[in-house]
Image 1 (cartoon, rainbow, N blue to C red):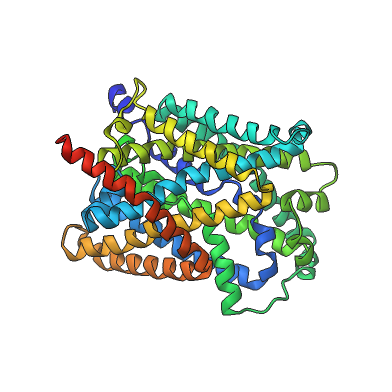
Image 2: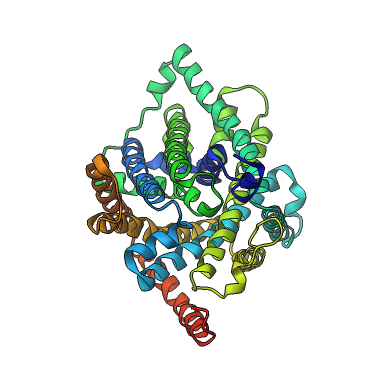
Length: 443
């Protein structure tokens, strides 16, 4: 591939894989064992269901990318299947979820960073100021182009995997040399539909981002091949890491103690490894969060530019700088994430993180559900040429849709309310932009 082509489309297989793994494995993994502890064996069954469901969702987006490599990501896929109205609602909710994710991750990073830098706790405004600084630091990296963001993503992804490798090594060591410790902490909570549903819903939040490689599709080398491969491989890798890393604390620590832990990995290492490893674990948590923030910042800009290209937002937001980065789009999403941080620091850290997490999860659901339904509709219209893979395409689309509906039910009525509110807030924006474009003969 020529250097000019690489500059125009800088994201290859490994960068796309790092984008998925880096976005999926953010701050959530470091609290996931504590969140799942009360559910006992339901956590393992819930993880199994979530793994299958998320692989089906990944398969849906892989099929869409393979079928329409010339499209610039999810908006174009949705528009092919549903036209403008439903597509706007779905993609508006998803767009909001991306910059809310940036605010959520920045808040989480500062929470862990304060244990390394106690000065952040001295004044009330220090923590939000640090979160804002992180938002804008990664905006400036994204302004340097997708390749710069891709390099940062690969580095942080490798670094964030180190403590997880340490957890796996610890688990294998204990299993080989002191297996009684596993038996002593086996879960006692009985299996139930309610428990499994709740555990699977928690795990679902942890796996958000499996579609990440499709968002900057216009900047991916050979998208028909690269995006599907990176999507499936990245999802399987992230899921395997999550399951392995979550299972070991669940089996090596008493469930009551684990459920009340504010730093499960720190407590796990301090329980079995001599010395103070808490600082190192906190450092890697920060690195993990920074990697996720970098990836989601890139996606926020690309998604905004894509919406502008398709007439949802003003055309100026599609403009790119000399580094082929959507500059105005990045400035806008950075400002919105900053506003969300400022508003949520009126809550305490945990409340702010939990509230934003619910909103993010709810806002992602329409894309996953309509992506699955859209793929099935496009197949019915014979717009997706799959040959002998037709049966698998239909199975993956149906299973993905069923899983998302089930997860939506598990999240509860609050999530449905937030999705409705987010969609309603976006309608004036959509109507105003469509009217303006028709008036100026741009649309």
